[in-house]
Length: 101
Image (cartoon, rainbow, N blue to C red):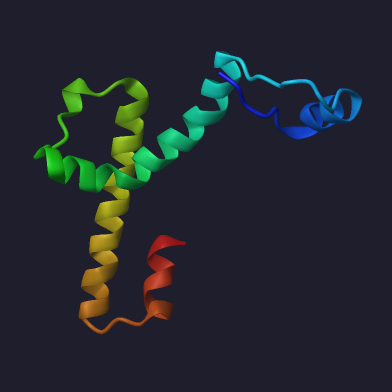
């Protein structure tokens, strides 16, 4: 697999050996691609779950880290619901802020 080396090393190699073919090894490709892929999946998870029909999360199937993330998600959902309810009741932002400060 041919690719252009990125960053300072790639620039230095190009200056030193302009006719050389630069290649990227599998580990570095995966190391660089993984965060981008995972970020894209995270942003799309709600739509992915909806498409798959998997709208429920089964807490017993989660890893310890996933459980912590899920618990945080549940807390944020509860907070958002409470703030939305207060806003519907006409409570101003200045009055809402002390609840979560």
